[in-house]
Image (cartoon, rainbow, N blue to C red):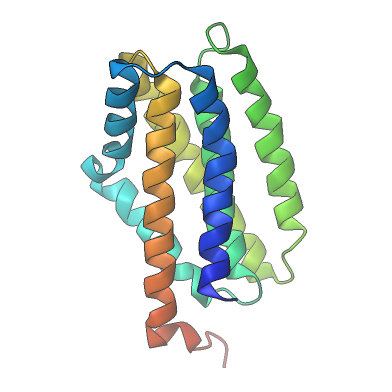
Length: 180
């Protein structure tokens, strides 16, 4: 799969998920602060960033549609984990992201053809869900605009995944077969 196609898919996913958040809130200083703090929250937690980086580096090693399935599974279930933690009283429409992300994950699993793809998608999805629920539960409640905190995190997560998948495609060890 071409790297330009993967980059375009990530841009479309981010745009479609960030656009409703940008339309809900009027622009103010707290929105910009929350967006910036969300963007820089993952680099402050080294082990989360390394886990996402390793998932992206592993994506080219997965046979079949691994380049698409693994990063998108991580992003979709990251959104579901974050939406679980956002207050339903304050943002009632955010709860619609949970079934949407899970349905999209199910459709994504239909693209898998091997057990290795299924396992990689499940592990990446679990990682994404736990990172999303952890950050929104512990960090976003301090900010007035948690949706923009979430959007900033999502942007950094996408940039990190695109970077790590691109590096994984360049490294020659991704062509080595694990089976003899």
